[in-house]
Image 1 (cartoon, helix red, strand yellow):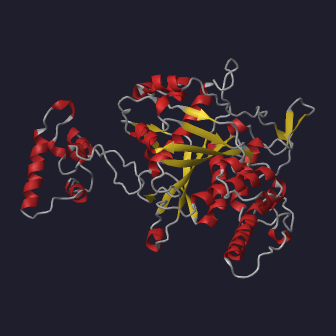
Image 2 (cartoon, one colour):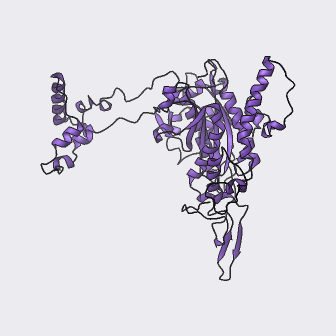
Image 3 (cartoon, rainbow, N blue to C red):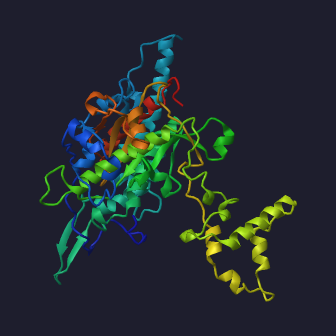
Amino acid sequence: MRTRSGAKAPDIGPRPAPARPGPLDFPHYQVQGGLSAAHQHAQNLDQLFLGLEKNVSAQHVDALNITLLEERTLDLLVPGGYLPPSTWLQDPSLATESSDKGQDDAASNQKARDFEHESFYERAREFLLRNDDCFDSLPGRPGARRPPPAKLCHANKFYQNLLFMAEFWDTSKDNYETNEDGKELYTGRRYGAGHEMPSHYREDTVSAFVELCVWPFRCNLQNPRSSVNRKLQFRKQYYPIQGITSAICRNPTDRQKARKGILEGPLVGIHCRSATTFRTASDAKGEGKEEIISLLFEVGGALLIAQKRAREGKEEEKPWQDQFWALAGKRHLGEMAGGRQDTETNASARREIEAMKSGVEPMDDEEMEKKDHDSDGKESKKRRIQGPKQAYLATKPPESQWESKIEYRAIGKALGAGYDDIYLISSLNHHISLVHIRIDDSYLDFITHGPEPAGFDPSTQDWWILEVQRSKWFDLLDPDDRGEAMRGLWGVMRWMMRDVVGGG
């Protein structure tokens, strides 16, 4: 085990007591209003969502026409036939032998199911082990017994990260005592309270859990390369979606693309949030500011995944691509700040154009830098002091919203379906939940581009609704919950990777 400083330390004390654990809490979402309220607020979505975090209210939920269903069991959340049976959490060698014999299709399908069952159980078996046995089996663990109490093959990375998380959340060994000097001492696993845990511990643990589940499907995780790739296009604005940490994508069959690190998708989004309190003492359940923000960011994460999947077969439309300031060859022909024409800049542009016409390549930045150095090798004052011309010419257009290493594909979406089923793995505290949102193509286009169609009336539009379903919160510190969470995610992956017409 490691403390927050990174030093190895056993689970024993006595040592100075960490902060007392706070109450475990989750957001309780409550949708207010109805179609009429949604229609009223949808009239001016652009204005309503300005300054969202400062003025967040139930109006924002109404405006997006979000409908929340009660907690769903996995067999209702995952389309029928794709959720692995609960018997898959048992050793397949103990299962009764199939009565199907021969080489017919039934026998072949049974063999395929048996093989998948073995692959599933090979990984689920490690999730079902006791935490202490797995922690004591990690390399470098002080006081670890030999032979190790548990044999880990696939889940080493997961339990290494889960151990860091447990140091803030696992209260099973908590023991507070007071010594002779009146100082409170502690023995147990924790080195801090849950709200003090660095957010990357949660992200790393969830990522390790998901990776283990999706590798058999020839999939991997893709992390957005910059904050720009985490922004949702909302009409003419771009809103950063907090919590979107990565997404499940498919590895391409083309070896050249695979060598370049290109992935296809995304299939499923991963959304991790650090909030541990969601309402004040005066707020009713479902009316806390953090509850509403949490829901909006979760829905925003699903819309962001849907927007990326909808890019299949399209070219990026850059709003700035025809602007003079976005084109290096024309940028110097524009106007400087304040609307004044810069004669020196235009003269420099003409010289460059004449040089290119005569076949002489203009000097690049490195050559210019050498020229501007003094004979002693010291940089001249002229080069050191950047004037408005240099600052203007160094201006670059906004970063692309599209990731260069992603081939956008709506994998699992049937051609002409008219809607997309978006799944999120949502994480809070030390728990995860599967979230499913069906997003109509018309809804996505309305949110992305707008404006609302002429004569828009949500009471007559079947597409104008976001139906949010979620599973229970599965505790990653609980072996049984880990097994159920894997079963749900495995079922989602089976369904997303099924053979469909036009599904990527």
